[in-house]
Length: 65
Image (cartoon, rainbow, N blue to C red; front, side, top):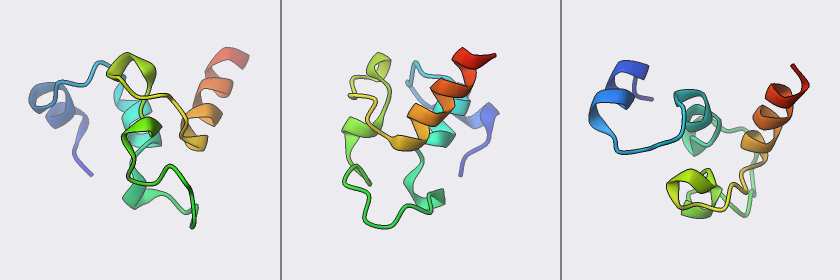
């Protein structure tokens, strides 16, 4: 996985690094996820549909704080 510095300097993503990490499939333990390696898993701000289950959990944690 790329570092946060590399993420900021070398990608055009608008999502946060935490959101990127949540949607990073090679680090995910969910076998058989229908969103694996699909662009739809990314946040809406980056043109995805925000369908990654890990992203949903991350967003839930943020709203609870």
